[in-house]
Image (cartoon, rainbow, N blue to C red; front, top):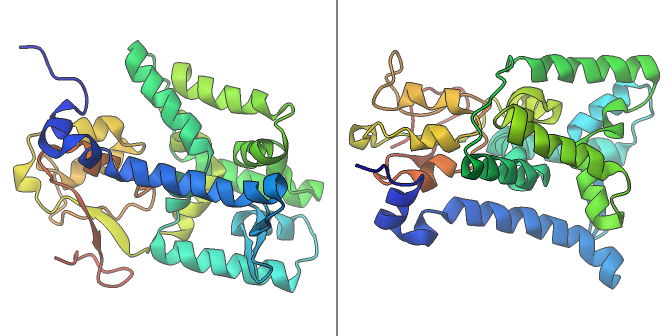
Length: 290
């Protein structure tokens, strides 16, 4: 018997839109954020001024990337009150909603890495260099130390997130080389390697969102058929097996690991409707809300 293509059963059970709901919503979010920045230079309609690192919305709301602000502080730069307020607003949002929501719902590089993952499956590329997932946290620490030593926000010279976002708005320049390198790394060398093993931005936001409220829960795991398609598409596949039917040592069905990006890929692809978004009662509570 020929095995159905990845995601086929979900499409049969839920329809195309039902099997791609969270993907569609994520793309709407990502492209809408880009559009808000683009309409200023393109149409002289400045709803948002700046970039993902630091922006001002409607000339009222300051938003600052707290990771960039932290690097700036380590480098010895003066931190303005506006930047500090903006960082506090952003940090509070991701603390409550989930830090790595940034990775799947905001970051434009996610579109690049998703494309590499899709093409990798289509081409049947099997080579996969597995690195230590702790590497991204060591790189996060290294960027802060390097900022302190050099007196610069050093990661921003090579940060693909910033390069891609600025490039889309103002022109790519040589930044396309780094973006292409990320794409080829995920395509040929390591499956979802950039986000899973290297990116210090994702590492920072996973720490920030450690106690966030929205979580994915396998609250119908008795219906799980162990097809493992959710594990195949998950950018952090190590977090799913403990909450599925085959999981051992975890009696609750909710994913509490802060590296979860809340992307909804696992929900979309599950034909048995095992996984859903849920809220934990309070930060730190290990009992999911039913």
